[in-house]
Image (cartoon, rainbow, N blue to C red; front, side):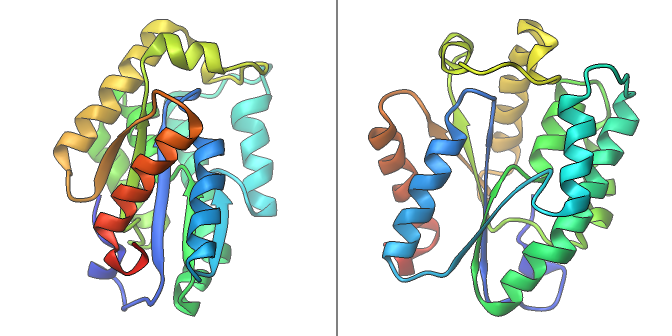
Length: 217
């Protein structure tokens, strides 16, 4: 993962992505983070990847909801990339150019881990395709919510999507992949202990964000 400002023209905004296994609590923590940033006077744009555009939402339905469709790992990865390219063009890049903060539920790291570490594709190939799909726009910080598999499974109280239905071995590879990527890029990826109450985890996230962006502390 690299800072978006290094490979494209300077942008005034800040970009944070939340990631991790399903059941780690991303939705609750994203809402808490956005509320905190707004209380500190930041203008915040939220999005989810895939999704947040008409094209992205249509692709999301194919990827996660259509249990009748078999999509090969490479095709799956490329569909995510197509949705992300549209997300960057319609949402992320314009917001950063305005000077807004962008908080995204997942981004490129999810592809690297889900289709790479857990799915068998080469993570380096995924990173290369991702550089094209994103136009070089990467998060300033990725927050990986880390939780053990048993806790994550207990927290999933809704019907499982296609990826969540891939079994415990797949989820074990997911967790290992997220931790490996964090070890590979510690300046760009912060691992957040997602055990405990919503407020306890939110406090850890605020500390990590304030460390990376002292202006909001």
